[in-house]
Image (tube, rainbow, N blue to C red; front, side, top):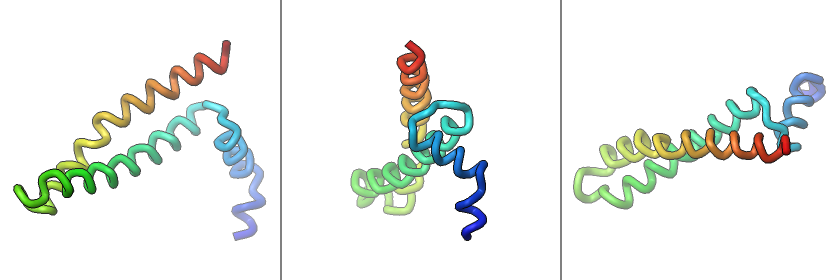
Length: 88
């Protein structure tokens, strides 16, 4: 475990992630984090909205599948705009 934390490559990555530097690797990581959170949120929302009507499992599956459709383009657009604003 100490080898992972003292690795200079991982340290540089965590520093760039925490400092708000936007590069390809940090965009991919933020996109994966946002997609995972949106899948969980979509599943919960689907269960709350349509759980009694079509069943909790189907509504959770549909919510989990359709939630990232709106989140992924929004995250990419937001990171693109942040990148433009940081360069000005």
